[in-house]
Image (cartoon, rainbow over all chains, first blue to last red; front, side, top):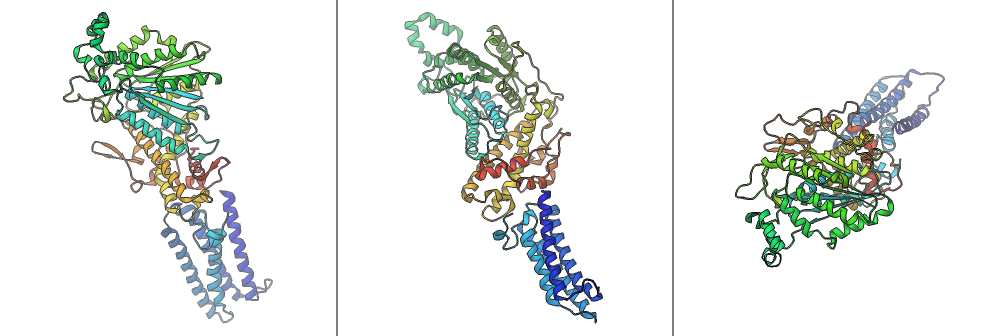
Length: 140
Length: 489
């Protein structure tokens, strides 16, 4: 069981590493020279990652393994809604920052999209086939 | 090669029932040996006999699944033959008819006179199709005349015993009550007949007896003049044990187990026979079953000396795991198997099976073991296991809650029955899966402080693990995974 959890968490962090690379590229960040406006995309990534980790923790240790599909879907969509809400907040705050160059598509599509991708590939054990098309792609 | 068991009368059949469950739990010592049961009862519609045969059929259905070579679960084949009745012809349904008393008076008048001296007219004309009604003398006379190795069932028993010679010892166990009719009559009579028939041909014949002493009583059945009298059970028992001693049965048998209970259980429905005689299972049958397992393990004597073993319990109103008797060094592993099977039955019936069936035609981690398995067949196989385990839970509930009158109420000492059962007026019943609360699962076992408490989440996680047994296939692989997940730490 521990190997599986380690593998899943490693996979989640790998996916969010791709999100980070995409963010750096789209925002043309200079990693050696920190800009205050860089905080917004990082906040969005962190919020999405936190949502995904919360999904994993809840699925692995809180939600009953044999809970109904309603419970599982309800939890996942609630977290997705929180991530989208967080994206709204980040976009609003970024828009008010005159030094920032808002990229709403990355916040909404990236935040939700990478959450979705990580869910397809690395959802906790008893939700591993929940998010389509996990039943097709997930053989582990 | 088989473990051979002959169950005589209703109590012998109830012990067969108990043995089937102990076999399902993996307590028989050798997986490759079949448990072959022969039931003997003049009452072919005896409720206890029919129940035993039904459980045997459910077991047989489960045995068809492939749980793997190393699985303790259902590892032995179980076959139940019978019931054989010494009286199958309705025209020969009493002592007078069987011995043809009118002809005997002409041909052998002294024998006829002896019969008339030994048996009253009522006894000679008493119908025996529903048993011997607590009159073992009638039963012994009839068994002595009617048991024949030309009969298919006895012929098969003899052939099994002869066939087992090449593999070493031939273990043959007989069981029945000493206080009723069929068991009291049949056990000593059939034991002697088998000894005479097999003794010279089978050098390593190990005969064993399980004598069930009084452990239940009942109110008199109305409108029945001839019936077993519960108030006479103790006297009948004393006479029976004296008979076994005077006839030197300890010289014939390698082991004799006498099991009884001081505080009798009151049977709910008194009946002289047929389907009405269906006494609920009792913990004495579990103890006797463990004695049977001990006999099959072997080693009843120490260096050829006879051994007297005593088994008792600490509290008069309960039976705990520590009280259950086993062979000397096997208590821990055998109790572990039994506890694992109990947890498996509860977890499977109430939690896992409903979830598996709900997801059977979809995709879920709990059915990953069924990836290449046709789902309809898997569903049928899984349902067969559930039906068997439901029967097991009924048995477990019954042995945990014997109804006693006039003494303090019996306290279940093995399991907390409220986890899987509900008390109602007149007794207990199993909970439905909807009534079951998994929060109580941790309290399933009583008097087991040294073992870990069952955890539903841990069971679910464990059942998704790989089954390291190439012979586990199909739905059997999933069942095996569930069973392995129920091992208490």
